[in-house]
Image 1 (cartoon, protein in one colour):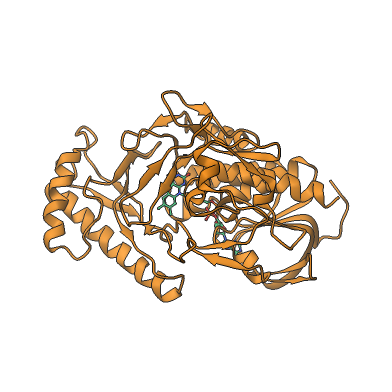
Image 2: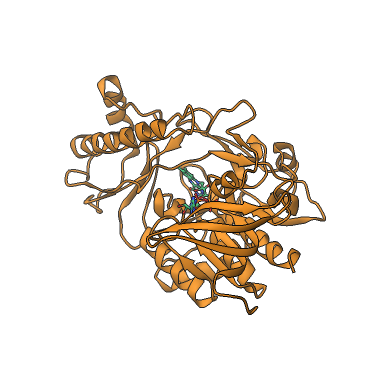
Length: 402
Ligand SMILES: Cc1cc2nc3c(=O)[nH]c(=O)nc-3n(C[C@H](O)[C@H](O)[C@H](O)COP(=O)(O)OP(=O)(O)OC[C@H]3O[C@@H](n4cnc5c(N)ncnc54)[C@H](O)[C@@H]3O)c2cc1C
């Protein structure tokens, strides 16, 4: 561990989702003095902010789950196992893809523990508000927290904010959505309790109930197949993704409308289950949010953009630092995901240049902000892959700046 003044770090990581946890642990494994800042009061990113309760991307798809992501992510999986999650590959009955099922309170605690054990300093309730820079480097960040503002310095920075908020304040050019500016839909997974667990969840009954609701209901669902549902480990609750909302832009007005609609829809949908679906008579909504699930926002300009063609052909490369193994899951049409398989050996290499800001020497990307075209983005954004790009970004951020 290097000796530095209290407010000086080797690596500052913005964002405490899968990308940020991977980056912080990766940099710490190299011996860096690391600060991670997260705007919420807990870690986890979409898994805990938006009820996204399955890690995708840890395994290649196919008849058997072949591991595509290991490294520091395994430290987190071990913490989750210690809290009672089995973390075994689970084949989704809806999509036939291999995933790891999660429970949000375990994710929060496991992340607290793994960062503490590995010497990462964490500031919650703190967001990166501004930076200072030269033409080619970031120099310091202004953190806005509960105690006001403070300035910290670092040799290198990792943007793992999902929405490229660090890149934005750094003045890095960003594209919104795909090449035409179109954003993937937002969705609002929810957890439902109070179900009679002796009654299997009847997909046909859900389909029939919502075909009826869609005729007059205020928030018709595009998921005419009953949506995606699983059972949340440790709780027996139903996890359900049934509500999607197209996004025209990234304005607060559009997000406010989406958030409000998602809560009204969740209320309606639980009422429909209670009235129409066997076993749900006493069901209740355990939780929405804390915020709606954002699939896509800004893409900062990287030195290389991974392409759909790279993934379709399973391109291998000598400068690969992480593997993309999740099928390209396109949500251009709300509620109608389309999956395109990864070719070659079942994964493609992600080169370091996808994790480096174009024109800024010490800004790195992790998670869903890495360089990718719209098809590649539909794969690399998942959390398993985000751990891997995070680890690679954190390690490179420390090594390259020494
Ligand atoms: C509805 C939905 C379903 C999905 N389903 C799956 C799935 O089943 N499995 C899967 O693996 N992936 C899924 N994804 C994709 C996945 O959840 C995200 O792409 C993934 O979480 C990206 O990880 P990340 O670490 O890059 O970003 P995030 O998980 O978004 O984490 C970013 C973190 O940065 C913090 N932050 C933002 N700005 C600042 C700031 N200025 N200062 C400090 N902190 C900041 C945020 O609070 C957040 O905690 C889904 C996404 C959605 C929306």
